[in-house]
Image (cartoon, rainbow, N blue to C red):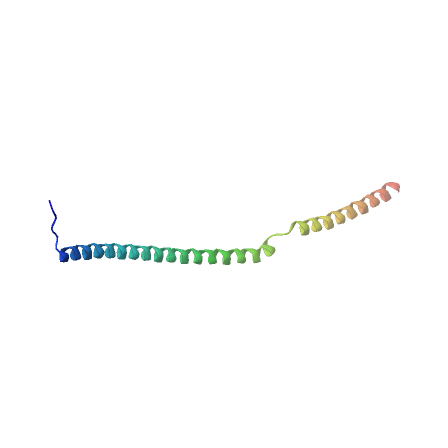
Length: 102
């Protein structure tokens, strides 16, 4: 039992096989490029969102001192108020003692 195949049939079969391989490779490369392009677009969108968040964060940081009081500043202000209240209490106590001594 012998198989008899012409040379040109083998060449045609080989070229068909190589053509199919080339076609599949071209399809895979096209899919890879489209996937890569999609990822690039998504990355650009994410970068835009990050820049917007950074901008908002910087605006918030710049407005914080205008809206909120720092702990040290609050303590300093409370100390001044308590000192004034103590001085007022001392003055009233002295007046009460002077009136009760009469």
